[in-house]
Image 1 (cartoon, rainbow, N blue to C red):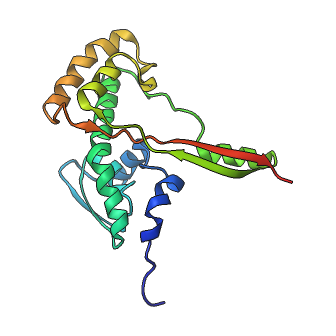
Image 2: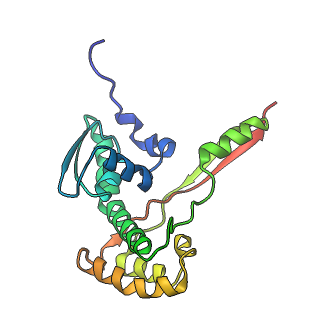
Image 3: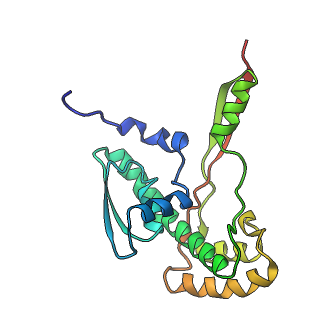
Length: 200
């Protein structure tokens, strides 16, 4: 086989099929399995849109991403500017909660799209259409922290108040030492509707 397959035209749909970022627990298992430490450097060849590279960087090591498809790298750059910061803050929050004795502090969320699609297929439904909206406008980091403190994000709902309230100043200080509070945070989220119809 000669030549290579150019995935440039796949950049716009890749994350919709595979997810914006590798789940944080999977990234941590990957880093642990490879014996990576926070001061290690990693080169990911064929990084695509950065769904692994960004999540792996949040787990500790410094990651360099290489991909021959420029549109893939453009998507990676867009995601990494805000998403990597969001992931770092989330993982620092997880670390602080776990140090306080809260195991698996964040709720597991709903079923994945793949699980829902598989169940509907068993029931005789097929995907008829899909409607996607752009992600919400980025939030200033200071506003993002405020929403965490006020319990607007559901992933902190399982945290007891006696742990959450003392944790907030520590997280705030950690963030202020590393980031510009006026910097916008692009939370990796997309609004989408998938319409299913019963197969004829």
